[in-house]
Every structure is written in structure tokens, then in C-alpha cells.
Length: 502
Ligand SMILES: Cc1ncc(COP(=O)(O)O)c(C=O)c1O
Image (cartoon, rainbow, N blue to C red; front, side, top):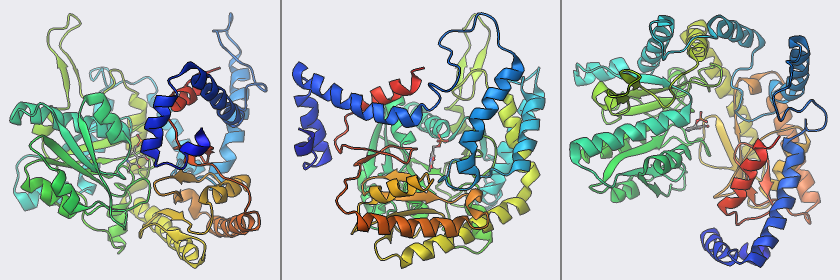
């Protein structure tokens, strides 16, 4: 059945598949197929199942600390080599040994801290307030208050990552629109390339999400966005740049539209917030995307990406604190006391905020500038080489998130071949393509050359072996595809179940 469904447009195929799979007989058949797909993935994702101690219950008596450390060191050594040598797209943004040791030291100093107890750890509040202030200044805070004469300051919060920043921004817009404009059925408008975190936010917060198809340059279509605005619109969002293709949406025009229609505008600079300001200073063609634009009312910028902080922090900035208030949670009647929580979690790892602060002040503006220069130069070299490959084409004109596809080859087979050479690239779809998100790991001597050489070889291999079939549905965050085009969400449910199985 899959074979025939694969010829239909995905949305129709998915609907038809859902309908047909309701019969017990068909369900059994599908489950058997899923078992096969998941078993193949399991071998790749569960390599320690037979080679290491397994705990499905707490050990009766505790194991020796040294033994535990030895085992964990052995495991991590096997996992480190690929990203350390620059084989992995994105994922680890600095990876420098001295930087990591420094962050680990900071973490150790602060490992018990929790911003939920600001009297016990006032250091956590200091670090978070300063992370927000430094990020705001980097993203145009001063320019905004000067140009608008506003006495309200740009403010923000530290969150656990890009997804939480986006989720909280959507919550703030939803609750403000409800309180101020009486919007009962809130809607948010995003380009189709916006990160899936917006869909997650919409689903969690019961907000309707409207995806506007992007143009040929993979950037948001302003005219189409304007047509999607209704009385229920709470905000419009754009990416700087987008995760899939590294395209920077026309934030100036989108935010102008938002201001004209009196709705919020969120710039998702999770990926670019700590790159674009420096790239602009270096003379790269960076369009305005931050608070320099009067219509931009919030920005997410991930410290745990190009801020070079350890995983677990992001900054969400608001143009003024009125909007930020709609993000807070407060409970004045709780027997536990006057409870408040600015972000999603209650207790939070203060050590991560401390390490983020330490990363920012240790790197400094000069350090960020130098890092950005290396990334831009490496990305330019790679882009120029890809442009010479007649079987490949670049998607849009990206700065450093380089997406490429092929009109002549199965691009997922090219990826599979790169995987056998040790690479871990991101597979994307709609349209099928791959991307390499260039980080400091790729700026090491020889890495860009190795990428280009391996890519050329992969292309030649696929051309020489045209008969094999590649996968069809790329899995986010993995250099892997599923051998089916019509993926209904229950397969993803089972995939996640598999990950949690001991
Ligand atoms: C543009 C963009 N927005 C949001 C996110 C989500 O960030 P996180 O994975 O930290 O939640 C990402 C992650 O890659 C991203 O690239």
C-alpha cells in the first residue's frame, strides 16, 4: 500500500493512509512494517545495549564513583570524536577544549544554585540579569530607546533554549491580546520555514498557527503574510536566519506590517542572534533584524548556540516590560506562599546561567567577532565549492547555514554516502535537501577541504550506482531518513517510545 501512497501528494496520502489503517488487519501489517523500520534505527541509536552495564532499576547498593566515571568517560570518548573533528552539522558550536574546561569549572562552582531561591543564590539573579542586559545591548537595545525616545527599557528572561523562548513569547502575545483586545481565538502567522517550536507553542497554548509559504529565495513572502492577518492575529514572526535554509526573512518589512496592523512581531534569532550583529560589523550583507526596527517587539537569541554557552540557555527579549508581564506565572493564593515563576520550569539550574554568563564575559565582543569571521570565511569557501558542483544547487543565498539539493541525484543517497564517510549532516524536506550548519568546529584546518572532497566523492558514488533507492522522510536532528514518504504521527510516537526504552 505504501508504494502506491507514495505517489500521492503527502497530505492526501497521509489522510488516506490514516483512514485505511483503521482496520485491524491493516494495522497489524503497518505495525510489522514499523517494527522493521524501528529495529533498523535502534541498532544505530542504542549502541550500548549489549556492551555496557544496564540499569532498569536502581542498583541495590551504589556503584563505586570511579567505576561510574570510567564507564562514562569511555562512552563519551566514542561520542566525541565526530563533532570534535568537525564532522557534525551544528550541534556543538565551539567545542574548544580550553573553553569547555572553563565552563565545566564554572558549572562545578555553581552546581547547587537555583534561581528559584534568589535569597540563597543572589548570584544567579545577577548572572541572569546581566546575560539579558548584554544580549539586549548586542541586539539594538540602545538604538531602540534612542530612536523612539521610549522610557521603557528592553528587557527579557533567560530560558532553557530556543523552544522555550518561542513558547513563552507566544504565551505573552496570546495573553496580551486576550487582555487588551479581547481576542478569544488567537492566531499567529509564521513563514513555512519557521522553526517547529512555533507549532509546538501553538499546540501547547491553543493558538492557531498560519504557515505562509516562502518565496523562491526561501524567505518569507510579505504580501502573502499581509493577506493572512485577521482581527485574531496576535503576532507575526520571522527568522534571522531560518533553521532549514539559513534564509533571513525580510524582517524590516514584516515588522513594519505588524506595527501597521497593531500586532506583535517576534524575530526568531535563536540561530543568528549571536552571529548577525558581528557579521554586520565585519561588513557582511546583514539586513536589519533586531530592535533597531521599531516594529520588532520581541527577539529570541540562543546563548547555547553561537553564544558558546553550554546547552540549556537562551535569551528572550521584549521591547518593554508590559509585554513581558504577560509571560510570567503568578499564584497569590497557593498555601505554599506567594508563588511566581517567570519561565516554564520551577526550579532551574543556576549553574547553566552562571556558565552562560561566564562564556559571554570570557569571550567578549572581540572573541565573538573573531569567531564569526572564521565561520563566515569557512562558509564562503564551502559555498563557492558547492556552486562549482554541477549536480548540486544552493537553496537561496545563505550566510553560514548552507542548504543544498540536487536536480539530478537522490540527495538523501548523497547524505547516506557522506554518513559512511563519518559526516552527520541535517536532512531536510519540502524540498528534499541537506544542510551544513557551519560552526567553529568546521573552521579547523582541513575540515572544509575534507567536506568538499567527501561531497564530490559521494556525488560520484551515487552517479556510479544509480539503481539503489534512498529514504524519503528525513528525521530531524539525525543524518537519517525513513524508507517511507507518508509518515503518520503514530510512527513518530513509536520512535520516541523506542528512545526511552532501556
Ligand atoms: C531558528 C531556530 N529557532 C528555534 C530553534 C529551537 O532551539 P532549541 O533547539 O534550542 O529549542 C532552533 C534550533 O535549531 C533554530 O534554529
